[in-house]
Length: 91
Image (cartoon, rainbow, N blue to C red; front, side, top):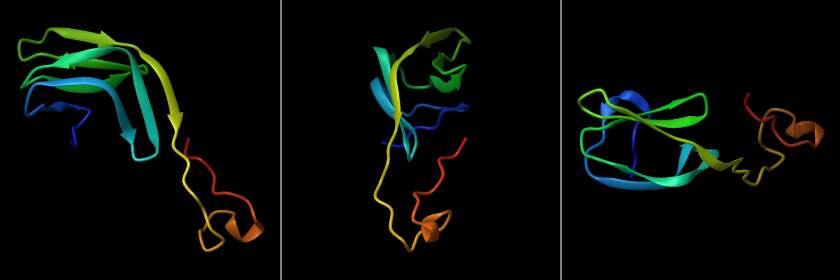
């Protein structure tokens, strides 16, 4: 399920979140699962998941592990592939 972490878009239904992909190439696991109610808004602040309820109440969840998801790359990919090296990771 696609969920926006922009701090503005409300979550469409009750969810239990224990891990998620912040981007297509970055995976995050939380220290402890977070119950997110319908209407809550999610954001990432200082590396933590912040859940803001409809009343403005904020709950913060720290991450336990996070890592880049590396895919296969081929010589036809840009950014250094012609020199035989993998593409650079975004900063």
